[in-house]
Image (cartoon, one colour):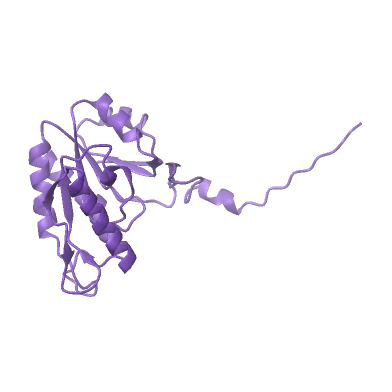
Length: 216
């Protein structure tokens, strides 16, 4: 059951808002023991996702924001194919017109591939395999971005241990894309400076006065 749930979390973490979200979870690290099963679950979910008119109640994924972004995403998909990742599903235009892209899943992705290193901002899932936790922490932290991360596990102690070592501003455990007004949100590294929300988010609105007096 944990594999089913993890696949659903990963699916929503990426494809929410057609993956046009600053914290879209486009890189998913999966343990080798469950990798093949997880890939199959992700493909099943992607193939079931309804792409189309955003005004239709049944639609789950609308268009990309512009023709430029549409073409950019297709370019990333082409790069994934050229660099040796396995295209499991999707990878093409969806619908007869408009900037719609099929929910796409790549397996066999390596850390140095373009689709793993860069922010795609589109519905392209990269599934990477790992064998041990030390390895996956190091690889996850090798990214130049650090806005958000998610962990799905039955072992809460292990999850909390990993969160201390991940270089990301927000880390969800067994969930993704949940926000509270009280909780600061912002990134590490190239994902920005400062925070929104919470008491930290108010600091940008302060008017702080400094007074200096020379006594002698």
